[in-house]
Length: 211
Image (cartoon, rainbow, N blue to C red; front, side, top):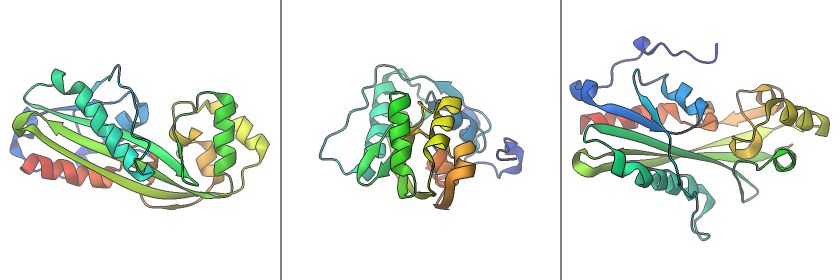
């Protein structure tokens, strides 16, 4: 089984006051909700609205996800309570120096997958933890290198038509059929490619609660 949401097998996050903290995941992504549930027993999901995911053109591609995760955090801070800990995140794909976000439709999704076929790319996820208590904020990013084998055109079109990956950066889900069939090598965190680098996030949460 790919996912195990039984958080009882995990060591408890170290701060005794954790029970008094309301953990918020500000994301519409069902994958991030599922992933966070693997390391945090109880949290709430909130939706961010009216966030223009824009960034300076001069910003290096690998710094964009961290910038956008902070942008999302800033958009919600006025609605946070004193005991809230909010998690925001953003994931991009970088291929040949080009940033691939979410495709606008079928044609762009096919174009993205053709670009990724038979070549390496990098997936970067930026995460921001925010708390009004002490006005604390912690932002980090994690990179994973992914290598696709050659993807025949008919397989690309079949995947796009069946899975409609229009809500995914780079137009693919690593946990879906195209990942099992097409990815030849991953260097780094598998879960980072899905949208949350769990191994790093868990340590940052533990450190956050201890401060």
